[in-house]
Image 1 (cartoon, rainbow, N blue to C red):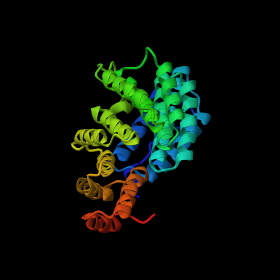
Image 2: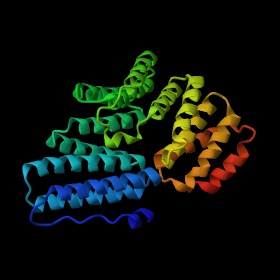
Image 3: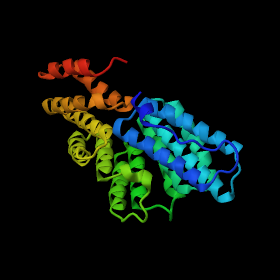
Image 4: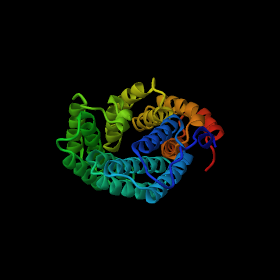
Amino acid sequence: GMTGAALSLPSLPTAGRLGMSDIERIQATAGRLHQLDNAHGGVEIAQIAARYIEYVEHAARRCAYGGNVQTALHRTLGELCASCAWFSFDAGHQDTARRWWDTGLRYALLGRDRLLQARIWSSMSHQASQLGHGAEAVAIARAALDDTRGVRDGELSSLLHTRVARGHAVQGERGWCGRSLHQAEQTYDQEPADPLKWLGFYSAGEVASTTALCHLDLGLYDDAVRHAHAALAAVEPTPFRRNRLAGHVRLARCLAAAGELDAAIAAGTDALDLVPHVSSPRVMAGLTGFRDDLLIRRPAGAADFLERYEAVVPCP
């Protein structure tokens, strides 16, 4: 497919010594996988990443290396596992994602990397909320907050507070959710010490998007619409197509919940324009849910959208 052609993976020695230059090549590959994922998403990327991890592990077992390289290798493998898990999660493969996150945590522990553990816990908390396990989502994100006290910057604090908030929203806990969202906004404004590369996706728009979803869960539909608009405005000028698609889908769902069906159909139509360029079963599930909602309600003006949906969205 398009991704396989765009990516030739660098080779590693299968005997002899592994050095820091090898680690840097592995890290560069991880970066390329994320670039492809940000541009397109894709089930294929998870499979490529999984094969690459196995390849790196194989080289690590056959070669010799010193202590510094070993620590760097464990951290780099942990990051690759975290990425592979995220790609699997995006593809809707929840059990596979969880297995990769578990493996990533093991490498993070071996590499004594608390920030990497927090990154993985943040993703696992997000998954728990998506699956409707609110209490689990809160517990995981709280553990990450406790474990990174004193080593995390404002951005990571903010991200973890949004994860806690979402878990509370899934549980219907309005007061607790509001407190966590407030902390997410306050900590976001603190200057990041040394910005973490993997947190590049995190922005004020991400705070707004989580806030919108929390309000949607809590039945506060007008607030949900307001924040969904803000989240979309933040992501619209970026090259992250999947995040833009998600922004339109989120806005459509919030508008429909608020009873603003004409505006919801317009947002859904904007989403359809991006569908051919993105491969994300996770985001598409939200768009399909919106379509199902329209099929039940049958508002005036839905016919064009439904017809275009059938033309654009591939049958599962």
